[in-house]
Image (cartoon, rainbow over the protein chains, first blue to last red):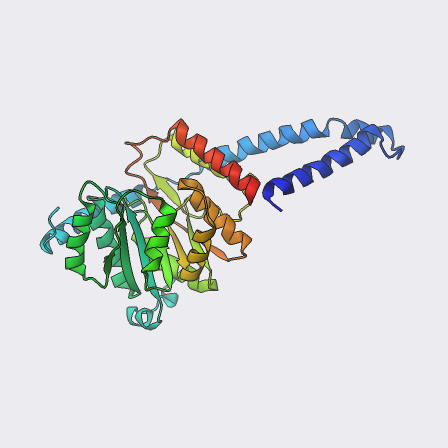
Length: 92
Length: 254
């Protein structure tokens, strides 16, 4: 099963459960509370996911490590390498 | 990163372990960087004692990269520096296939020749691989103390955003899918490259996704990625678009 198929399956299941509860498709005669809560769920889940995404990407952006020392170290090693290679006869 | 001294074996022990590491270096116009990356590879492999060879796969660079490679061969020896050039710029996947054909190692390193991937991480990759006999070990810029130098906020945002999208859609169980600094068991690389059809960034992603499909084990090593090229070549709308297209293709087909 591809990831797309997994997603479609998952979404179908959630939509099916939501529809059954909200529109009383199986004649379950659930109390009003269930239906009132279920009805806005899809929108609520989407908005929650949107907020989660923004927060996560924002957090990861803010904590993205900056490797200053690595850049400095590389610069030094480049000098060292050029010297050594020149000694060994490299024409650059 | 510090490795506990107790777990570091002597160079002699490392040499005797029987493992050999072939480093594949696809190059295109890397006349300036090739000697430097080779020097660093020789330094870190030499210090750690692991057996290695460096395979330079030049795609007909007009700037004379191959000439420099030949000079390096004279300096370091034909058993350490192998040249497998190609006539013109072909894909990365085919470069790996081409390189692996002539590799005498049982492990393959793939990395960029532009010094964004630092050979100092090579011993860490090797130790990580040995920890659990991983089929492949991938670099990560996002986890642990991995990181980047030389990116502005925009670039970092695109990077994190793209990675988040990839995680949501593909759930790959790997923190950095577009990284191309990796260590593979030779058979694993051969197997995976055969099955991969994408290009560019997406190719690297596909390798990991297919590895997961085939139940290969994947380890990670945080690295510092020093981008000296970003200033010259900004990440444009075209590249982003083709990345998204590639991602959606992987999403729909794997």
